[in-house]
Amino acid sequence: MHVLATAGHVDHGKSTLVRALTGMEPDRWAEERRRGMTIDLGYAWTVLPSGEVLGFVDVPGHQRFIGNMLAGLGPAPAVLFVVAADEGWRRQSREHLAAVDALGLRHGLLAVTRCDLADPRQATAEALGKLENSSLGRVPAVAVSGATGEGLDLLRAALDALVARLPEPDVNAPVRLWVDRAFTVRGAGTVITGTLAAGTLAVGDELLLGDRRARVRGLQCLGEPHDAVVAVARVAVNVRGVERDEVRRGDVLLTAGAWRLVNSLDVRLSAVEGVAEHQVLHVGTTAVPVRVRSLGGHTARLLLARSLPLRAGDRALLRDPAEQRVTAGVHVLDADPPALRRRGAAAARAVELASATGVPDLVVEVVRRGVVAAAELASLGVELRPVPGVQALGRWLVAEPTWDRWVAELADAVDAHAAAHPLEAGLPAESARQMLGLPDPDLLGPIVRTAGFEQRRGRVRRPGAVPSLGPAEPAVQQLERRLAVEPFAAPEAQELQALGLGPRHLAAAEAAGRLLRLGGVIVLPTAPDAAVRLLAALPQPFTLSQARQALGTTRRVAVPLLEHLDATAQTTRLDGGLRRVVD
Image (cartoon, rainbow, N blue to C red; front, top):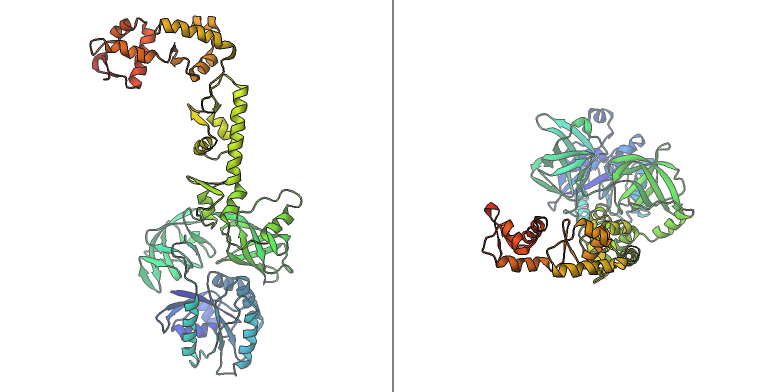
């Protein structure tokens, strides 16, 4: 299916033309029919000669309903511009073209209506000249009469040619369905309609509507039920979890987790003069007050009164709420702009944005942030792919300069800690993470490896580095000599105190591989293997008492030593408190 919107001055025959093409009534509300003019949005569809299905969003032409017109025009990828042969180019023709141009629409067709009432050549020439100076450029033109049917076959052929030129939508994109109408169906609940410009909707999908989760209960397209609908399409979505009074035009149904709500945008404006500070931003079917801060040239920062799911590359327009006129087109360049805190920051930002295209550059976005979650950039519309200068580590993307800085800073921190704390076995890993400002502890390991360091027991150190015992070295040597003679005669607390060995000294000696601490028991690192050799000579299995006697030690030493052998799978514990040496 393809979708296009109508545009043109009030009472120039837009709805009559849609009715003639589709056989359907686009003016669905009683007030519209009574007054003979479109007030709200109308919808209809037809099958073209090629077999392609074309849906129409019929917009109001009256100046008082320009907000409704913009709601219909915003999500449409193409426009059928209508000018009456007997009246020619008029005020709302100009206003609607300004909106088309501001939105950057590039696909369109001119229909000159009422050719049964006047020669269409003059109106056609004038309108084509106007359209050519807009984003539409040169477009085909067809003279037609909705009343008599003259030219309708030519118009259908021209519409066929138009839809054939439309770009293919991304049916795998996340859904962003701008709501244009919501109502209640008895027995079904809330139904939301809109133009699905990209992505795919399926029954059972769970979407977000504001802070509410909405499950797709049913789908209709062209008045028929579907299990799934792909873009581009006019859709009616029956949702569960949202009441009718909780949804309104301008709300948006979103793929959960795929979009970021933003309230600050850096943009390029199609015009600068006449754009006051306070404007209304029209995007999709929504309108939100914004404050415009000029950055320089045609760039500006927009501060939105409420957050919207927008990305770089999006098109919108600004409208002056007092004068009810379109003041500028908006091309979103950055939906997550940096803060402007220093003098001259706005001018510098304008220079940065001068070459921006609205297609985010992955390297630029990552370098600006240093480190960022890949999902965050994806939610802003940044294409994720392997590129030089960016490291992908799990769910994180890290810029090469940031990575190099982390490695250098870690090296400095490890060396500084070793000099300031010679008794410690290295820089605590959590201290390293906080010092580097890492958002995730899992990032530390790769940095440690890149720096050529090692991480053991929660500390980072240079390979082979051992704590310096300093003045405690003689006391440790004395204890080593004694334990070499009596390996299982672990020193009591009083002996350690007499030697001047406190917890920090013992930890440093253990980190250096000089001593082994089993809870509060201190032995040599060779003690476990020596114990196994003695225990293997006992009849198997053996008791704790037998082990204590074989080792010539006390229960205070034997219990933690045997528990250590159990934990290292050198012995195994059996029922009844027995143990045996593992072969």
